[in-house]
Amino acid sequence: RAPSVFVPSCLRGPVVFQARGRAPASGENGRTMPAGSASLAAGAVLHSLLSRTRIHPKEDRMRLMMLGPPGAGKGTIAKKLIDKYAVPQLSTGALLRAAVQEGTPLGLEAKKCMDAGDLVPDKVVIGLIKERLTQRDCTKGFILDGFPRTLPQAEALARITKLQAVINLDVPDDEVISRLSGRRTCTKCGAIYHVRNIPPKTPGKCDKDGADLFQRDDDKEEAIRNRLNVSRRQTLPLIDYYRAAGILHDVDGAAGVDNVTAASVKIIETIK
Ligand code: AP5
Image (cartoon, rainbow, N blue to C red):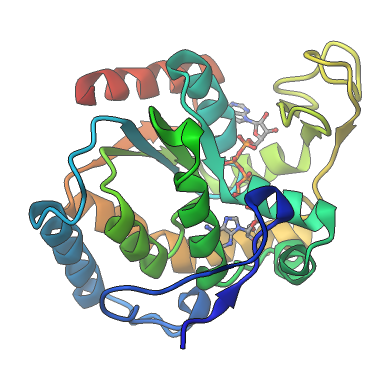
């Protein structure tokens, strides 16, 4: 029997996620994920088989993903790119935070994982993104931010659509910690600032709409360190997975926002 997954009310109530194809090799959150090259190779083979066997309808929409550790700048750069290419940013973190704010059953459950810096179960985020990808604004394309971040999520995505490119933002840990501890986000539009690197014109207020800025609950030092560990264990294998699929592009995420954006645009222009 397929597990039930609740999605935020903004995503039209409860849905059932029906896993298709072979069962993922790991348990929730990849905690029992087999390590090493065998699973990576199997993932890459699956990705390429799915591409060749026309499970995907022919797609000409933009299908991009931002990959990188917490605080690498995935959200910041995605926002620059969606302005330029007029496609939506699909952030599982933002979808989950919306559910937390609305107090839905999913939000209450997800909050515990998020505050601790752990991942929310695969089946929940896969259900969320599956539903989100069917919405009208994705017709022209999408930029995924924060999904997939485990091998089972990547395999589930490969059964839905074929990514054109993955932009991998490489940023050292000490920079990540400094970025996350100074991050501030707009309560209204989600614009992202940094108290030192990218400060708002008026402290505590968004430049775009004047709304209050807030600090995320998971941007506390203990949670940040756990998020980095979780990322190393569960998300890092995606670098090899997508490199083997031939669609990974490395970008120096430690450079300034303008440079990182320009490098990302250059990559997109080569795949269009
Ligand atoms: P999520 O919201 O996705 O958080 P994350 O991956 O930890 O990434 P962040 O949003 O923290 O960082 P970012 O890379 O977007 O950096 P940003 O642009 O903000 O997920 C939160 C939680 O939800 C997870 O921990 C998990 O619990 C759950 N979750 C989400 N997706 C999930 C999934 N698929 N599966 C399971 N669980 C999931 O930038 C950071 C700061 O740096 C900002 O202050 C910014 O101004 C600054 N900055 C950015 N770029 C630069 C630059 N180039 N130079 C200087 N400063 C910069």
